[in-house]
Each structure stands twice: as C-alpha cells, then as structure tokens.
Image (cartoon, rainbow, N blue to C red; front, side, top):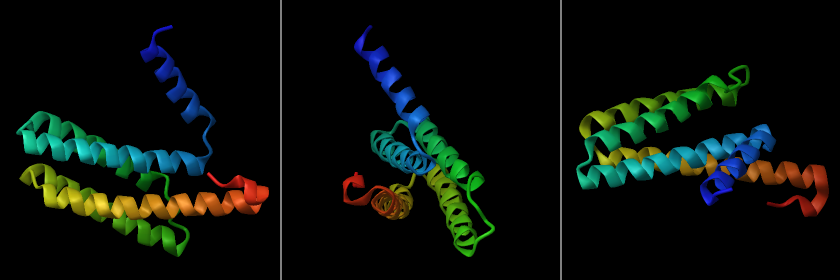
Length: 133
C-alpha cells in the first residue's frame, strides 16, 4: 500500500468514525485550509486556484448552514453569521480581496475554537478528566 493510499484510508476512517461534533470541527478546519490556500493564490496571481478554494470554503459554510438547528435562538444567530460569511466570500472572490478572506478567517477561527471547547467540555462531562483532547 502506498503512503498516499494509506493517508486516504486514514482520512476516510477519521471521518467515518467521528462524532457529529468532531465532524463540525473538521469542517471548520477544512474551511480555514481553503481560505489560506485562496490567500496564497491571490498573492501568486492564480485566479482559478483562488476561485476553486473560495468555492470550497463557501461549500463548507453552506454545509454548516444546512446542518444548523434553527429551532433554538443561537441557531438563528449562527445562521445569520454563516450567511454573512458566505456573502463576504463571494465579495472576496469577485474582488480578489485578501482582507475580506482574513475577516471570514477570523470568524471561522472563533467558531472553531469555541466548538473545540464545547467538545472538550462534553468529553469531560461524559468521561471525566480523562476525556480531554
């Protein structure tokens, strides 16, 4: 088995065995990866690569929107923020604007870090002190 195939198998197993909370964390991390790649592409003048990465980041934000529980007040607030982030990514793509990407990146980092804390607190509550990631 080649190293590449082993890595792909590992990734598939990671996603397949992850809890919903861990999947959300993976989505945030994936979004951040694509935002960083889009910034590099803009700086290198690679328009198609910028577009591809920003579209991938948008798809992740849209997935977060689709899976959001809007029956609770915080869900409605998150929906508004995700919608704002999605519109800003469209602007960033049209204008090739790194500053807009960094704005969305900042929001994504905040959400990711908060979500990570929620996961850790849930693990502590479920498994005691040994549940920290």
